[in-house]
Length: 526
Image (cartoon, rainbow, N blue to C red; front, top):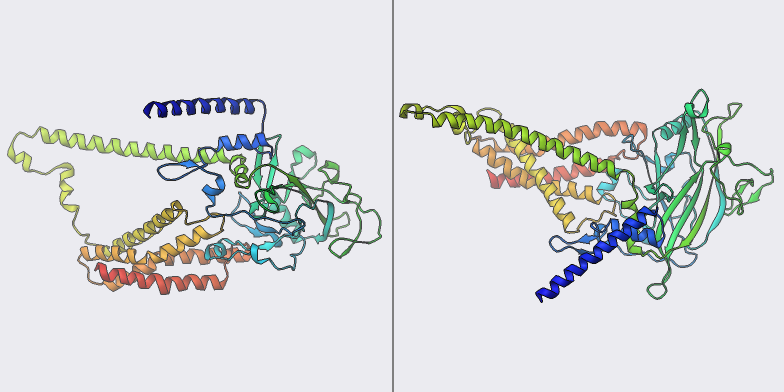
């Protein structure tokens, strides 16, 4: 059995070496990792082989869907069934102010109600993060491709136009989801894939030859949806990809005759948007973000097209491209390595200082000749009696800080434990933040107990004052900062501005749960 196991391990190493050579040859030949081809999927799976394992001690092979989203099951859609695309936050990496999709000058929100199978219950974390489930204005049906379709006409000017230019300058991106898949902009030529699509783009004055920078807006969107169909395994189709290609185009009218469009509204036909003509990005037809030649408001015609493409990629592997295709991963790794190097350097500096100090003291003790000299305490021995001596001043502040630290540490420990045990699902937005808040509240007893024990060690008697201070100190600081920031978020209209109902719910958790638990823990600890 030993020789058989040795031979099996040897054969496995040979297969791994051959596969590594094959993947290296594929990359050398220019094979991309973000495409929906079989070769690209195989290369992605190889690069993510270490992440596709689950288990604490004995790690075994698994798909990313099992590792990242335990318990998630695929949705199946029938022919012609409506597939809702949801509008998420409009965010930027240059600023921390997200906005809602319908804050932008876009088409109005559909009046249709969200079907029960697609509804998501809002939790406390999603309310604090500004996530709200809203239907996008795009009509998508299973396996029904459509050419360029006019959506609506919007007019903007003045303050709204200036605000849009700021959003473009700060590189805000719009995020949509379809079947819980974030929309992707991917390029096989550049071998990258990023979530969301930009509102527009800026052309620098140095590149255009004009006096000022020029801003352009994307108003046409080409959606490509890939799906898998296997009648022998399941009914209907499963969605495996959701891509978008934004286009900036100033649509041109054909005539003033009005025709009936699919949404029942009467609109004018456009030569640049028909079922046979697909808009493309052309510098001559870009849509500039500026008012008309006579100062009238800017008119934007939104349009879109949808294409369905069949793919052999399994539903469980549809998340691979989201982890392998981002060009920002190297930046994160560099930041982590940089932080670790700083910690190692500072640890070495402190250790060097301690070693030199202790070495000098120990050498002095070894040179003592007489008993009288040995009895004299010098160096670090002078503080040996202060280790367990209660502080004479600020014992209340010390107890409150230690108790608060114990409460925060316990909350984060239990949150990490719940995450390791797959009790938290990242696909449910706000669930992790909700868990942190609830566990912090429930750990109020731990904070009260630790604070009371330390306060008793300091020979103090006012345990009620200490407990109340422990329950109020940290929450009051956080809530004070939160309220000030919430005022500014409300003024600028950010999506993360919190309503009065959410604030009242947080106050209820603190007053009716955290504080009584703190007193209960203090009762057992004092």
